[in-house]
Structure formats: structure tokens, C-alpha cells
Image 1 (spheres, one colour):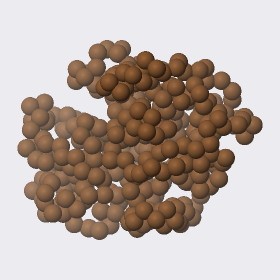
Image 2 (image 1 turned 180 degrees about the horizontal axis):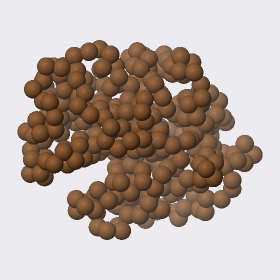
Image 3 (image 1 turned 180 degrees about the vertical axis):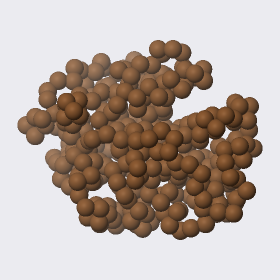
Length: 337
């Protein structure tokens, strides 16, 4: 926390989010290289945007893979990377701790085709939520999105808090969770999007529920920059958001086979010793809104949940303090419909 506090005291106030996003091409980005962390076997929308030429003249500099969303956004706060992305609830917690950051675009969500799911082995005795009491459930990060989804699933089924407290959440990298389930080291695992679909295709696992089945289509993770970075590099942020938003929409309007081929080419070309087969299971953008425009509910859902559970005080964090759609070129288009 001391590092965060030093940054808080040193942070500049966010400049007014001026200039229309439609004028992005006329702007000159202040910073032409953005450091970031990737995810194994996955292509992030900024990576796709760069490959499509939407970020030019900005270049991305990969400094390694992140271990979790919370780690990624902490790296942005401390200045180890220029932008980071995480579960919206994790961003709420970071801002509640007075970190000077702002979410600028949604990049992960759930829709009918792309969603996360809670799995058990095909022959498991677990048939429903009550059977999960006393079990070990694998998630990518404790206290983040997947744990929230499983907890909400258990709460909606009528389980008491005492019963829910008996569930043990075990963190592990997403690419390892399916293997741990097959080895019976975990009783259930929550897997997201294409990793989930690969497990289904491989067989031997049974789906209990999905986030889409629980809550419908929405965005649940966002990219953020520090207030200092936004103040010093507003046109760079604008270009980043514009390019990333356009990449999201490119996947929505481009034939699936072409999208998959492009993603596979990107993974193969970066030579990170990854499983390139995972991208074959890509189905849809998996972002709840057009161009990654953030909806207030994408954050109020978790703010309300934390207040209810005593993690936050009422109005300790408000949506306007957490995110801004000012840089997103699809913001006005969405608002006018």
C-alpha cells in the first residue's frame, strides 16, 4: 500500500476529457509505446488492434504475462506497465483503496455465444449448488470475478452464508484449471470463454451453470490507466481506446473463420510457446456492448455487492469515480439508440 500511497500523493488530477473521439486521426499521440502484460494462449483486443493497424503509430511492448487481473492493474498503478485490465470488482476495490486510476473501455464480458461456466467431471456426484458445500472450486484469482459468479450462484440457490463459507476457492492459472479438474485435485472449476469451450470439446466434463445463464449479457472487465497517465497522454489514451474498440467491432462484423485465422496467426508469430489450438474455439466478441462502451451496471453490480457484504461503505465508491466513456468513439452511437 505504501507504493500506492506515494503514487496517490504524486498523481496529477485527471484533465478534462475533451476533444471528440471522431477526431482521433487528427491527434498526435504523446507516447508511442505502451508497455503491457499478456495472457498465455489468448489474443487481447489491443494486440488484435495493433495487428489490424488500428493503433498506429502507437506500438505495444509486451513485458511478460500477467498472473491475474488484480496483479495486472496493480502493475499499472506502480508504473510497471502503462495500462492494465481486470475484473470490474477488482477495479472498484483498487479505487476504494484510493488508487488514482480510471477504467476506459470494457474488454471482457459474456454473451449468448461466449461465456464462462462452472464445471465438474462427467461422473462427479455434484449435481447442483448444494453439492458444492465443503468442496474445492478452482478459480483464476481468489476474490475476483469467478468467485463472485460462483458465490452469486450459490446465494441464488438459497444456500446460507454459513454453507457458502464452507466452499474453498483455490486459485490457479486458467490454462491449468481443466487439468487440475481431470486429475481430481479440484471438485469443480470455473472457466471462461474459449478455455471453457475447449474443455467441452475435449469431453469428460459436465457444465453446472454459466455466467450468461445467471445474469445475461454484460461486460465484467475493463482496461484502465492511471490519472497521471491520462493527464499527460490524453491523445495516446484516446487512440488506444479507439483502436481497441474498433478491433472489438471488427470481430463482430468479420466472418468467424477469418477472425480465428487472424488470432492464430498472431499467437504463432509472437513465439511465446503457447497452445495455439485454443483460439480455434473463439465464437464471438464476448463483450457486452458495442465497442466496449462501459455501462454503469458493469460496476454498480459489484459496488452494491461489496456494500451488502460489508466490504465497502455506502457511497464509498461511485460509478463516475471509476470509469469514463469519453474516449470511446462508439459512446455517442450507443447513447443515441
